Length: 163
Image (cartoon, rainbow, N blue to C red; front, top):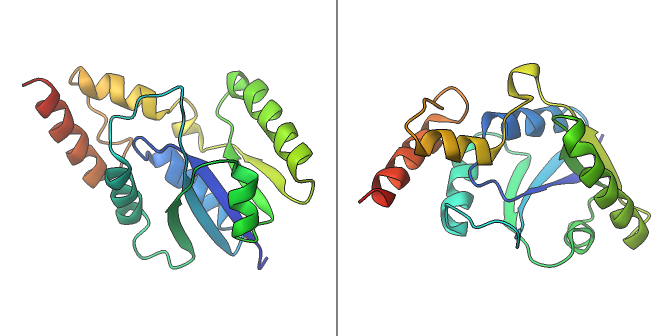
């Protein structure tokens, strides 16, 4: 204990699966920095400001979690925070190949920073932000899969997009 870790992602939006991984991480690490990074392969539904706000509301009351944005290499962001580890969630075998490649590249860039893989609770093992957005956009009930304030923002966003 006493170590700091980075939990990176786009969090567009944050889900109960993300929160599950975050809470599991806090059993291992003293402080978690949630790092909102860019993903050039994805077009975000929510602005950076909206994502920061949703994450901050989701972790309100947890004093050993902070939320920041970053650009550039994840290992540089981790070094800046003196973090010893990068937290990644593994939902299914399909996640493994990409995550394995990224972990090896990060190790090549900085051998002092470890990648720690955590599996979510079974109830969230299929959950992605992308699935939440698709189902929510078509009017499906995702209220049990995201925090209430995130669900409200999703409904608001989809209502705006349909105008």
